[in-house]
Structures are given as structure tokens and as C-alpha cells.
Amino acid sequence: QVQLVESGGGLVQPGGSLRLSCAASGRTFSGYAMGWFRQAPGKEREFVAAITWSTGDTYSLDSAKGRFTISRDNAKNTVYLQMNSLKPEDTAVYYCAARWGGPSSTSAAYAYWGQGTQVTVSS
Image (cartoon, rainbow, N blue to C red; front, side, top):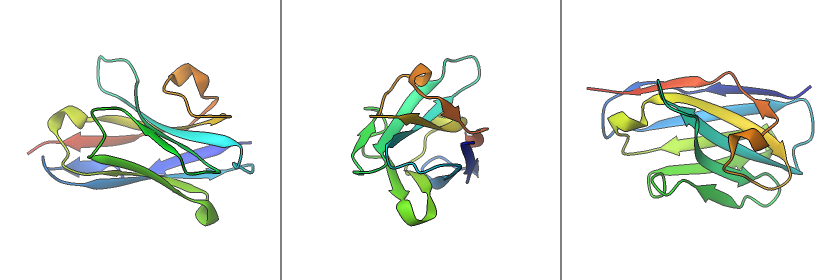
């Protein structure tokens, strides 16, 4: 049974940084892609970034490029989202997701989801 557990969210001031973690368990993820999505109140879930577990190839939302970096640690079965220069509009619940095959920016393509972690950017 696949389990994804996010952590690292919290309250941060504009311009600050956070690193989200997603600990994955339940199977070997070498053939999987991992994604980060976010959902703000009253808005649809939005793709942020994805990474291919085996190759480390990354894909990001245009607005996240240069500020957000996705990475993974194979030994720890953990995917990270480093978020810098945070803005109030980055406030959302951030979700980690996994899918077999290549990365996708479509949430419906992901079969497994974590419970989410709240990120609030406010002064």
C-alpha cells in the first residue's frame, strides 16, 4: 500500500523560504513520477512541479521556476519541494502525489496522494 506523508509546511513571511518533504513508502518507486500540487481556498488544485524518480528529470509550473525546486533522495524515499521568495499568493495546501510512468501536470493522472500540508505566507 502506497503511503505519502507530507511535512514542512507552516507560516512564513513574504520573501521567506520553506522546504516541504514527502516521505514515500509501500513499494519501489523507480518507475514512478512524483508531483507537487497546491490548492488555495476556493480554487482548483494546481500543478507545481514533478520529478521522475529514476532519472531525476524535473518539470515545473512557469510561475514556480526560479523560486521552487523539486528534488528527491532515493536513499530516503523522499521528495522535496524547496520554496524560496515566497509570496502571499503561494498560500495553499500543498499535496504530494505519485503516478506510474512519466510526470504529468494533470492531477487526475496521479493515483496516490498525501494528506497535504498547509503553507501560509503572511506578514
